[in-house]
Image 1 (cartoon, rainbow, N blue to C red):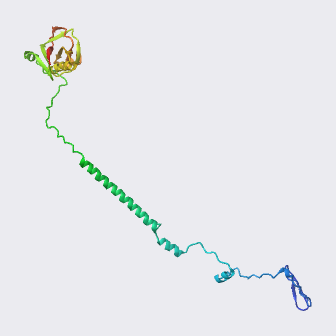
Image 2 (cartoon, rainbow, N blue to C red):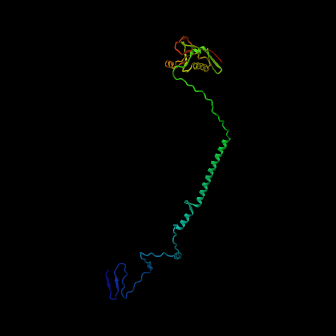
Image 3 (cartoon, rainbow, N blue to C red):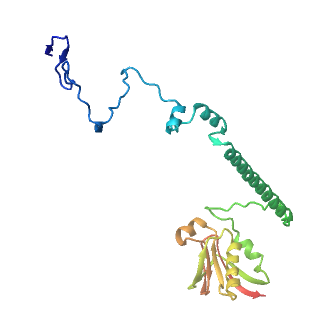
Length: 260
């Protein structure tokens, strides 16, 4: 900056915003009253922080500092100590009481239901226990192939064969090594004895309530009968004429009478 020296030793610093220099004997001009007094502000160093005004000064001036909304650490600790499992003490105890009521109700319902079922079972009439039968039937062996044990002469010499079913009975006359020529078959089956073939004829008549079966023809040679006729017992609904049959183990029987 340039400086101008005066004889009386005064210095005037030329610079922007500097006050106007006053010469010796010159009056200082007064400032306009309308300008008012220039406010002054305290100056602080950037590293210093002024002390906040005291509460008394603020009350005298009518100003109050806002209260902080953050809770005190001591208050938070006291509040957390009054909680149980994260719940308020009142909420926790009410929850425990409600759970206790539910458990007691469930247990009481279960006990009451079991007692009711037990009472119902005791009131029900006891069922009679049926003991299994100790009677055992004899086991028979049914032949599946081969020649059947059949003595036609012995059967014929004994006379007529009678088959009884209930109140009804049928008398059959037996003929050995004979057959019916021109007869009509009613049905064919496998019989493992001559008597079984007679029973088939009698049962048919019992079911039909008349003498639909009038005779039977039977062969004791099961392999030969199965190979040629797929059966060895044939029920007849007509007789035809008698003829001699030289095949062994072959016999016939016709219904002579029925009763019942």
